[in-house]
Length: 113
Image (tube, rainbow, N blue to C red; front, side, top):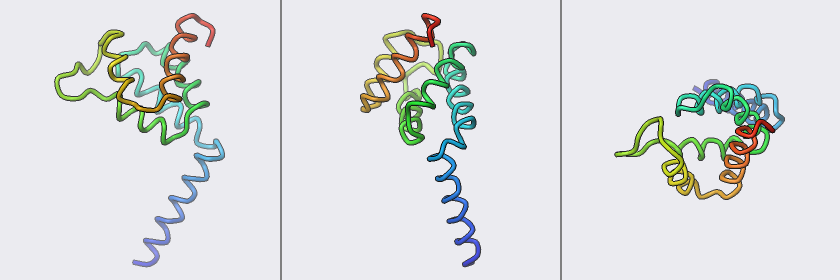
């Protein structure tokens, strides 16, 4: 039992170090991109935005963003418009996350990002 607990703690520590040092960035970027595509975004725009978001937001901020942007009861799962997006972004409660998402979307839509 002690070996299992110790092993779990070591794995958690290694995962935390990988996230903090940026070694897990490709995996984080892939996860963000996959989430954006599942929400109805085109693959090209999702790839552009995911790179910017993974660079500028912490893993915790990305997790909170994913949870806040998920459809709640009575909301469409995908294919929603700008009004629904703004409503979901207001739920995030983190101004830095909102700023990164909106600037990333704008820059990627303009072809600058």
